[in-house]
Length: 236
Figure 1 (cartoon, rainbow, N blue to C red):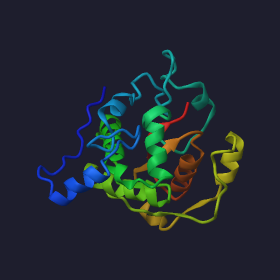
Figure 2 (cartoon, rainbow, N blue to C red; figure 1 turned 135 degrees about the horizontal axis):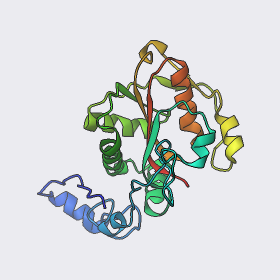
Figure 3 (tube, rainbow, N blue to C red; figure 1 turned 60 degrees about the horizontal axis):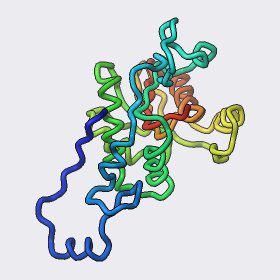
């Protein structure tokens, strides 16, 4: 199980901060119980990292060993623009609650915890890869994470992708609808920055992978070499 080092707090609290804690004590963002941390030890212990028995391409957890380089049946039929995808955990339970609290409730104080998970997954899978810079799906919540992750793993975040049209919410669409909905939604600002580069694309969740694969497609068409995908969680 992953050992998470939480961001250390200051040793001495002012009287005002102590008073605030009495009136409105700090709570775990996931379970709501009183705790000094935004993620209590109980909720942290319930988050299960994806292990090594995965598809070597898309990172999907496998129930048994599969011959043919451990590629899942889905990846054998698809021709993707990306080189490899890895994710920290399955999109369920506590990790799903964390993402929803951060993304939809805008509890941006969770960014340090999320970034620690992303950094761990990057270090485990990509630290020996030659990656030139980092990108993400355009959006404030992901750009905040990438700015912080960039400082931790020493890879620049460029922000060279822009959204060029509005899209319907992906949550209520099936696989084919999601793919059609996201098609043509993104554009590269400066193609010269992509030419021959290895790029790490970061996102919060891979469900069908439609959004992040569309980003990989536009980067590839702009001349990128290898495109690595990194997500906090993935659906099965």
